[in-house]
Amino acid sequence: MSLTTDNFDALVKDIPQNVRLVAVSKTYPAAAIKELYDHGHKIFGENRVQEWKDKKEVLPVDIEWHLIGHLQTNKVKYLVPGIQYIHSIDSVKLYREIAARCEKEGVQVHCLLQIHIASEETKFGLSRNELEELCHCITPQQQLWAPVAGVMGMATFTDDVHLIRREFRELAGIFRELKQHHFTGTSFSEISMGMSGDYRIAIEEGATIIRIGSTIFGRR
Ligand SMILES: *Cc1c(COP(=O)(O)O)cnc(C)c1O
Image (cartoon, rainbow, N blue to C red; front, side, top):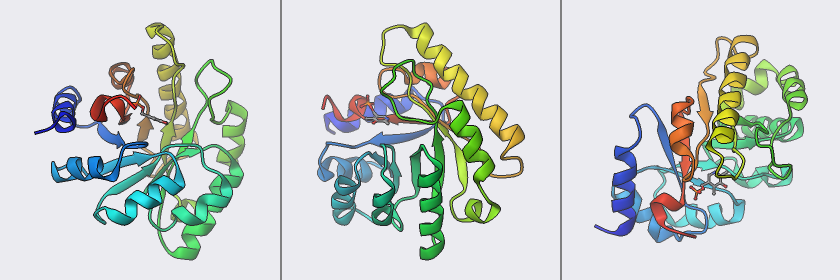
């Protein structure tokens, strides 16, 4: 037993079984990932393409990898094939590139639309208008290769739990609207929200995927 696996076990007890946990391993060494993998966990998230590639090379092939950080279009070619989920779709251009790359390589990548819900200016993500535009641009052919699996969002970095709850609730509302109007009959089903500091609120507000780093691996 180590601190990492102890932290992990305590966390897993705290989350409902229908919520998927992405262990965010950015900045932590591949050895830490391997330890959790040997402990039985197979879903990991990274936010930088090069760092992910370096780790992926030395780790078991059946890890399910999630890219959670901002992604530049010119880096997509390094991710596909290899990545299973991209949480950070924040432009039409990026989505198009991913879908094209998936079709060329003959692999599927699940895509989450990152939506700007925080009151901070600095966080990435689609505005309501950009989201509307993107949804109208997506073709059935693109959906085949790069299925839009749901939405992702980050709440404001604050102690104000009411604000955090409101932002998560907004994201869940957007998810329901999209499911009803744009992604009917598809596998659109995921709400990725909640990190170490706010995952309990996220779960209460309907998260299906939470992304947790420091609670598992320790302070960065
Ligand atoms: C780093 C990161 C996380 C995990 O954050 P912790 O506070 O370490 O749990 C989740 N989501 C995104 C997008 C991140 O960049």
